[in-house]
Image 1: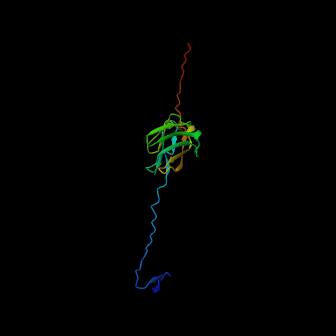
Image 2: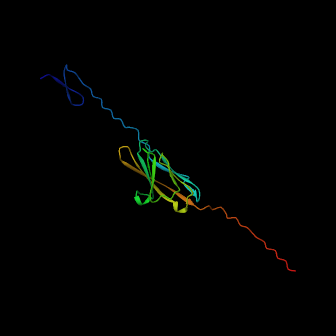
Image 3: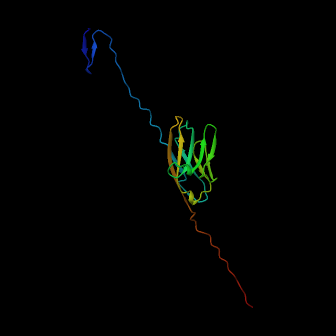
Length: 158
C-alpha cells in the first residue's frame, strides 16, 4: 500500500498521488413571490364594481376556479377558467355579474350587500398540484344624505 498523510478534515490522501478537492455549494433559489388576492377597492358602495386582482399567479397555471366563501366547495363554485382553450364554465354560485380574466382576476359588476365576504381562488399548476388563496371585500350602502323635497300646497278660500 502507498503512504498517506492526514488532511485537516481527518481523511487521508495518498502521498504523491492526485488530490481531489470537492467544493460543494448550496444555492437557494429566490423565494417565489407570495400569491395574493387584492380587492380593488377593498370597500365598495352597493351598485358599483369591484375587482379581485390576483398577484403573482404562476404563468404556467393551467386553470382557475373561483368560489364564494373561504373554502373550496363545489356548491359555491362561481366560475372556472381553462387557460389552454380559453374557456370559462359557470358554476352554481354564478350570478351573471362576474367576469373572469385570463390572469385569474375576477370582476364583480353592480355589487349587492349579499356579495360581501370571502372568495377563494383555486388554481391548477402545470405539475397538476393545486394552490388556493382567499380574498375578501365589503359592500356598503351609499350613505349620502337622501334628498328631501318639500311640497307646499296653497289653498285659497273665497
